[in-house]
Image (cartoon, rainbow, N blue to C red; front, side, top):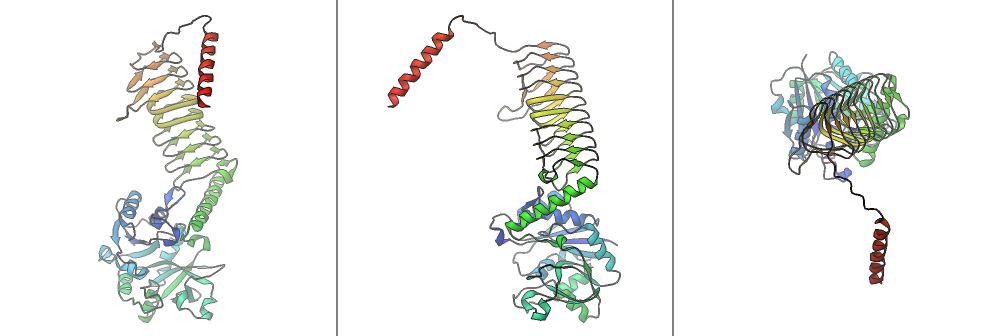
Length: 451
């Protein structure tokens, strides 16, 4: 049966004390909104509608960065969750199948939980996701008998007896799309807050003789982010889970508590990750690779048998083939390093292609930017680049060639040639003491003048 998603992302999040829309605050290098969208994507939805409000343009841009096909609708006034879902009605008109409502500030709902809700739809017209709360606080309460849900009571409208219930509402709901929109259209705002509560669809469904059910999940899945403190809690929860999954999948983490993953980090079995490694978005580490201590990686691919670090940085577009060595204080950006390349230390390779078996000496820089445009450096196979070589792009160094240490290479180097591009050394015997005395005299005069 086809599935549609409605993701509510209109709130300003005033308690975040931020100009940024709440759903765009990041956990694991990705907006909270992306976490919710990724969970829903596991259902292979035919239609995804994101309801934006505060900062709608930025929210829409972020949503489309995650799913180009998603539709953005705007809730101009925030009049409650029921009102928010109602804004999606035109986008879902005539759409068959079930609809799942998710929240852009609730990042940890598991796909398995959503699947369980869809399965429960075989028994109930409306299905709500609940959880047993350690501290129910101001959550809405689920009034249920086993799996059968009678109604949802918001905290503001609950009696003392109802507030004693620990089965709480996550807000996530599932129903036939047409039925959900029909129920939403019937919601009123006769409550303490004067808002249109999505939760009222349960009572409305029951009044029509339809069954409502509840599926429960662990409370950790329902963690919502409303404050900076909760954002930090969400980050900690994500990292703890990601580290545990990496270890279970056969990855060695020598100091797990110091490694930070992004939402989309992929690390293969038997890879070794050292202490204090940070993964930004878009990183894939193949099986058997090693990332040593204090490295920062984003937007890169590291192949089997390669080793990186310590203290190395791989930036977007870095592609390391098998058995590449990238050592300490090396930065790679938008560069392809073929099999067996060695870049030992203190080097910047940007906008470059480096052929297999090439050795890059310490202090090498590809001078790729002229102040306006970026230019590419192409280094062939089995090349030896001497220490402190400046390669002024665009420039090509042919297979088997060599550059002398301290050279500035401004023209192409043919295959198997040696290129030397440095000034001739001049030696002045006995001049050093005179120079030192002159410098000391100048310094003393400046100091006296300062007094």
